Amino acid sequence: MQSGSWPIAALTSLASAADLNVPACPATATASFNQAIPDLAPCPQTTVDLCYTSTALNLVFTAYGETNFYFDPSQTTNGDIWAYEVMEAFIYKGTDNPQTYFEYEVSPNNVTYNAFIFNPSRTRAAGTPFDHAFVSNPFGDGFKVTTALDKPNNKWISTSSIPLALFNAENPKGTNWRMNFFRTVTGPTTYPDQQLCGWKNTNAMNFHITPFFGTVAFV
Ligand SMILES: *[C@@H]1O[C@H](CO)[C@@H](O)[C@H](O)[C@H]1NC(C)=O
Image (cartoon, rainbow, N blue to C red):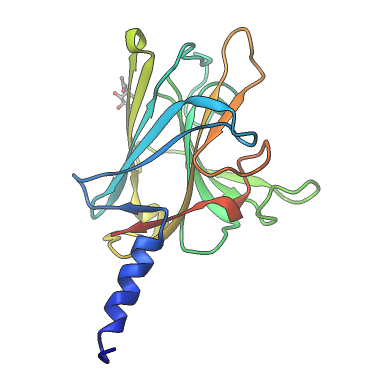
């Protein structure tokens, strides 16, 4: 081996070892899933297309196979939209199993949930602290969202943008992250029961198990 050649090889293998390599916009990388948590039963197809700019992480969530478009119209920003139908991203800048991370959700009604989650057990273990710190003015902070329902094609799409300053991560090329993506499925005949769908199986009816978050590299 030539001395001096291995650091580049090591960097390359680090990036390619990630579950998802997110490029600078307008290119995108897609996280795709169609299985339930934790039993791997069929879930409607869900995709999340990601890319970054110097100041934002952009995510396009697409829910296929949607039949209910189910939400509570009285709910507003940071309401309990997770009890109905949402698509979600759990986001952490770093490589370890996080105890604090950002939870972002969007509903078919274009309502978002924006909170840092404090989960020191990393598993939301019974009898341990579990808390939320809401971002109270997301649109003032530079978050963006638009949501389009395509009922004839059983599909809804939310295009979201989250400021990277939230993670001290502007100009993020070369950074490494942990993330998971989820979708809840319910409707008027099944509510409050939900089907839980996810990118990385947490092996429990519980999204908040951080050792199972996927690895994401911004390349
Ligand atoms: C969704 O919400 C955002 C933030 O309030 C708004 O800018 C956008 O116009 C809304 N409507 C749709 C259809 O996306």
